[in-house]
Image 1 (cartoon, helix red, strand yellow):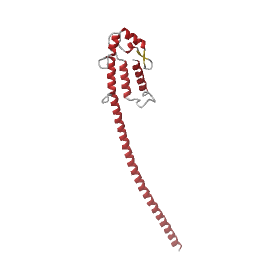
Image 2 (cartoon, helix red, strand yellow):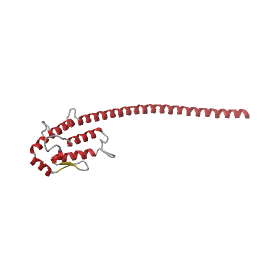
Image 3 (cartoon, rainbow, N blue to C red):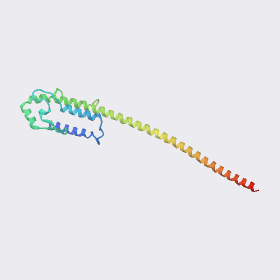
Image 4 (cartoon, rainbow, N blue to C red):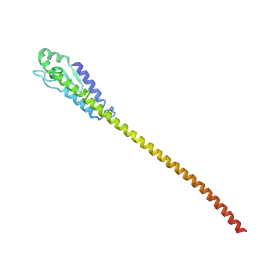
Length: 187
């Protein structure tokens, strides 16, 4: 139970990293809520018979930060006075009690085929792949636009050069005509 409390507290702390402003990469992700709910469900398990009905009866209590604290004295008293009740509450990973509930919860979270974590990883990978495809598509669109604009600018530069040559030609022509008209007027 002491190890359970330590592992539980580590999980709570890790989930808390992904909450609030400045949280981790999973801030706002439903997975954080799901995992937190699974922890709460496990720690709130009730069952058994007799004097041991919940984890508090075995010496596990919550502090104001949501961490579990284990009181060995409470557990030792319960185990000495009511060993059958302790055994019934704890059960086993396959036959009932707290341990079966915890095993089922961990299985639903960690199953490599369709567990919640595997599904979240798969969904995240799909989202990443979709975003990468959008980025690739946008990059191709930008490249095509850049090529088109470069071609248009090159055409515009060629047209401007042609117009500058025509301007030079007409300026020279008008200058020559003015000079010829001035000579005729004098002569």
